[in-house]
Each structure stands twice: as structure tokens, then as C-alpha cells.
Length: 281
Image (cartoon, one colour):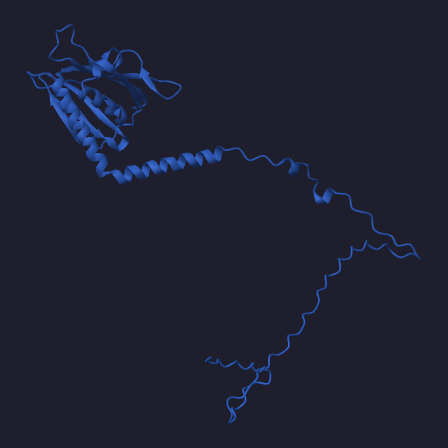
């Protein structure tokens, strides 16, 4: 749970929960994809603050925590019914450790009405080789408070609704940032990709400058230079007979009819006379 350095910018409060001894404040730090939790103790008689401790939780961890609490699966899903996150950052030239713990602890029925306990501890920290921060020695500030299950469910419902409203209002910016992250990853992979190896035939190929030149041709007097072999003659083209001319078609005209009837064409053959039927008896 790596956290950003603190700034003077005031974060809006998402929820404020108060008991007779403590305050639980939930702040908006969604600009860095986190939510800030703060437990402050005070003296009810004097009204003075007796201590304060804060920690940041990632949005993804918050979604899981809220789901388990709202669905009443917290004590059944988590190991030892305990949710614990370590984090920290550099502050005033030193490393500060921050620990956040949610746990289900009824103390054998003594706190059956207040089963949830939230503990936040701040103190000196030690940065590990992988960049994480772990506590170093006793914390300088450590505060705990107990809450009834319905009250913590109500807090988580309000926080989840606030998160949904924030994501809807900043949807385009969130999507653009995710696209930019993917593009940067792809660009980094392209830079780390080794160059392609040359093909074997290209490596074995002798450059033109290093090849030995062919000896010049010499012409012996009295002899003709050898000519290059003639190309094989192409096979003779296949001949086809010329088409026979078609005689013109001459149309014959009909002669004018004479006085004895229509004239016959010269090519017409006279029809034989038909016998006339005779009537017998």
C-alpha cells in the first residue's frame, strides 16, 4: 500500500462517524486511487484531542472490504477474520509506517454488539528492497475503535455510492488514463525487444566488392570469336487452307404476267395436267 506524500490540499469528507471517545473520518483521495481513513481520539470531558492516526487504502482493496462487510461474509472469507494492510511514505526526511487493520473480534461475547474493531498505527518505518514499507519498532501513534455491524455496513454503503458517483463523473478521464498506460507499456515492450537476426543466406552472401573479377576475353588473330550458341529455331507455323469464296446470291425477278395468265419463271417445270373425273352411266 504505497502512499503519496501529504499535501496541503484539503480532501472532501466522504463520511464522519463519532462515538463517545473517537471519530472515524473517511476522506476522498481518489485522485491517487485511494481513500484515506483517520481515527481521532478525544476526551469527552475536556473536548480535547487525545491522539490521531491515519492510513490510506487502495480503491481495489476498498471494494473487496466493503463487499465482505455489506454481504456479511467478512468473518467467513478472511483468514482469522482479519483484514490488514501495511504502507507508508517518506515524511520530513524519514520513512513513516502506516498500518490499517479491520477485524471481527467479539472477545467471547463481551463485545457481541460491537464486533468490528478498526486499528490504525503510525510510526517509524523501514523500506524493503522491493520498495514496500514495514513497521520498525513501536508505533508513535496507535488508536482503535469498535463499531456495531449495522453502523459499519452503513458507512461502507455510503463510501461505495460515493466511489460510483466519482467514477461516473470522471469516466472519460479515467478511460483516457488507462489507454495511456497501455500505450506506454506497449512502447516499453517495443524498446526492449531484441533486433531480428539476419537470415543465413544474407550472412553467407559475399559482397560484390569482395568477389573475384572474371578474366577479360582475349581474341586470337585469325580466328573469329566464338559466338554464343544460336537459339533453337522456332517450329514452323501451322498453315491453314484459305477459305473458299462464297458465290454471290442473285435474286431472280418475276416476269410480268401475260394475257394468258401469270408468267412462269424460267426454272419452273410445268405441272402435268390432272385428269378430269368422268361420270359413269
